[in-house]
Amino acid sequence: QVQLVESGGGLVQPGGSLRLSCATSGFDFRAADMSWYRQAPGKGRELVARTSPAGDESMEGRFTISRDNAKNTLYLQMNSLKPEDTALYLCSMRLGVFDSWGRGTQVTVSP
Image 1 (tube, rainbow, N blue to C red):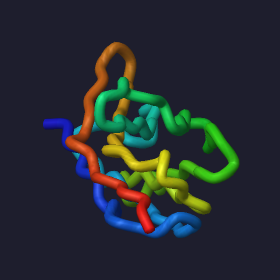
Image 2: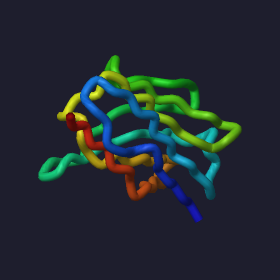
Image 3: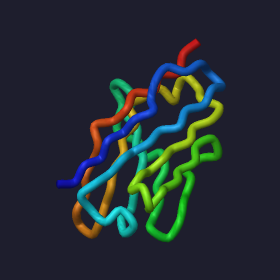
Image 4: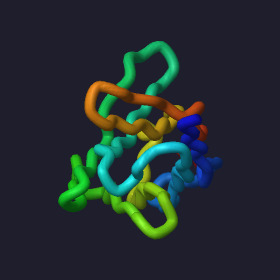
């Protein structure tokens, strides 16, 4: 079955960096659109970055999404983190009409 498992979250000070990973299995990773979303307490789910099979994209300058097709793994490099980046970060895949989500990894940015 399709599995997406996020890791790499934690507590970081403002201005710090984190690299999130999303290990996947059960589908053709190379052919899938992959995304990172985040959800802060009391707020809706927000798209952070998306990558298509053709290449990498970044939604904002501080965050960079990348993928390793050999390892079936998606990454999110986050730099210059701010308290407002605090959220549960979730990985998702879409292949055709099928999509699936991981359970997320918590990122907390605090002094």
